[in-house]
Amino acid sequence: MAQPKKRSSVSRRDKRRTHVKLAMPPLVVCPVTGVVHTPHRAFWHEGKMYYKGRVVMHRAIP
Image 1: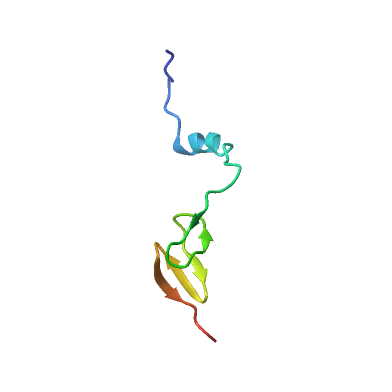
Image 2: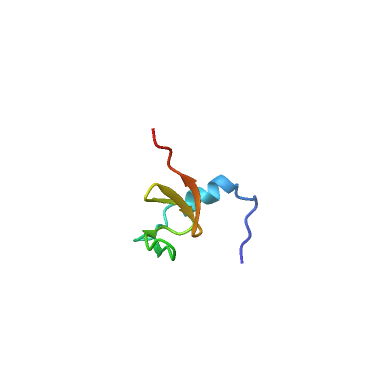
């Protein structure tokens, strides 16, 4: 099998991989609040920010 003469840079490799997209982003249901959200992302629900089923921030009321 042919081998490359030079190493491909990380940016060149990642540029090639950007064209592969999922048709629908994955969604999960929070076991605490029951809100549907994208995995590994914090989300707001009723003035509180949740991450991994825990409250990490409260919304400041002006």
